[in-house]
Length: 260
Image (cartoon, rainbow, N blue to C red):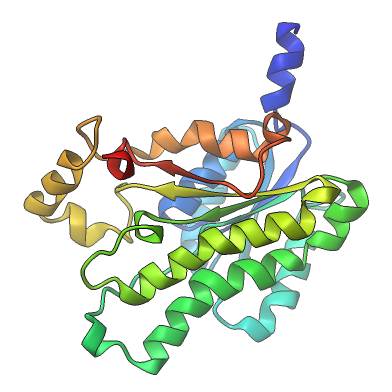
């Protein structure tokens, strides 16, 4: 295979992606990675000011980003939010959706309320399906699409004070398989990334405590916690034509944490 052809397999030039949870953490980093690989990106999150900062960073690097400030937890508005995303980049079709928005309330099992349970399961599990589905007809028509969900160590491990979060992230793995079964015949691949411990707002309680931070690092085979740049390769790979024959999979990016 010629080098140019190989590189083209990983290029995202001319493609457009929607990234939820793009104002911070994994979503922000993944949006930056996609832009660095040549993609146009629609950034979706609640916080307008933070979204503008990410968009400015992408624009400063010579790439294109648009923002849609919206609360995805309000399920009745998902269709309208999706329409705003489609209109945000004029003349471009949406090639993929990265579902990085999520919440972990870290409640003991005895303290979980119906409201907090529903909030967690809604944002982490229901929204990725119903929001992504809004983009499927156009992807199906063009015979190309990429869906990347965010799973977790807690998709397969039980952590203290993580019952609702773990249930939602276990569901994300099965959701990813079911999405793949439903849509892959139209060349819409659906995969999930299960990160280990990375420094984000969501994992702030872990990294702010040297004891828990070091404990997490020591659980890996590599001997350190994740750095956000460790997600660059898998993000671009799952979003690109290079992953054409991979679907329904969850890949742990955790330094060997779940392999021990």
